[in-house]
Amino acid sequence: MPRMLDVSDEVRSEIGDDEADRLLGGDRAPDSYECTSCRTPGDTHVEPTSTVLFVGDETAVLAFAHARCIPSQVVPVAEEQLVGAVRSINQTRPAAPDATVPAPNLTLPAPASPADAPGQPTAPGQAAILGITCGLVLHGKVGHASLVVEPTGPVGRPGSTSGEDEFLDLLQDAGFQPVADLDETPEQLPGWSVLVAMGKLHAILQPAAVGGSTGWWQAHQPLQVTDAWRMAASQLSEVTMYAVPAGMVGRQPREDLLRQALERAVALGQVVAASLPLAGT
Image (cartoon, rainbow, N blue to C red):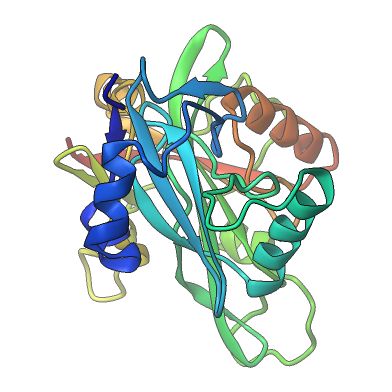
């Protein structure tokens, strides 16, 4: 029985045409797998499956995911994280030379994969790196298209060398408000917006000093969002942006876990938010 497997052009370019053809032919693809995004079982014979290649400096691990969770893609990760994942596999199962293995300790957030991009402020000595996770967050009984923004480390004001994390203070200076209840929809922030085009997330825009808008965050490559996320954003004509300090929420693989992490952060007073008008469709 043929496998319902997708190998994207970028994955093919990394693993080569011969290996990609072997995967599509079933020689190197498993019958069943654990989705590297939602961590639930999958079957390549009965449901569309994405190939996901985790790439470190010297190591690469090919994993599989439900196509409904994430598209086939190449995901750069830290070499030590990737080596740790391979080591955990070797410790729990016999070695299988030339076999494709899962990545048990590597997960991608749903519904869209994270994007790291330079943000506007800076961390001491380097540009701030912002992780973006898309998901639906219920405000009462209404699902709101949401973005959770979390930097990879402390963010200071431009020129600061103290190492103190001022990420939330900087956003509050720009008009974002502390969150006391996730069920409440935050107020819209004038001049800010979220750019979505052709079903993909492109950027978060902020007011420009000379009028108009400028990019506050921009995806290296536009991020595919789910139909449910896009429909929620279109129906309300806005997106809720939550921001948290580094290490507060993390890259949660499911929306229920994302909400739980946000609720914990709210209880600690570590979330600011605003509703941003939707630019595009």
